[in-house]
Image 1 (cartoon, one colour):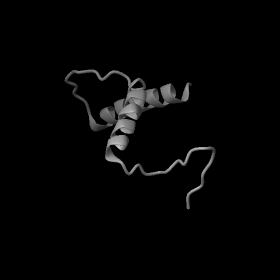
Image 2: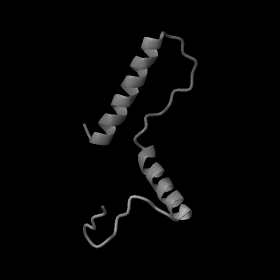
Image 3: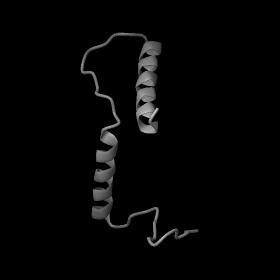
Image 4: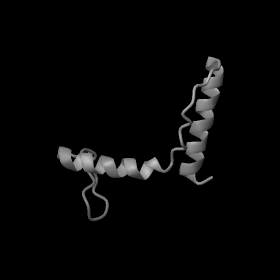
Length: 68
């Protein structure tokens, strides 16, 4: 079931592949600024350490997105 809110018909799916690609590029550009820079280096650690680093990175992204 679709509901129209406002003046535009917001459809979940974009059927035109070129329009979908363009919209995806715009969304990717918007979200690119939220990602912290990736450190390019060789790291050694345990699986738990890598999970902790990934969690810290995800927390940093979430704080940036939510404005905290």
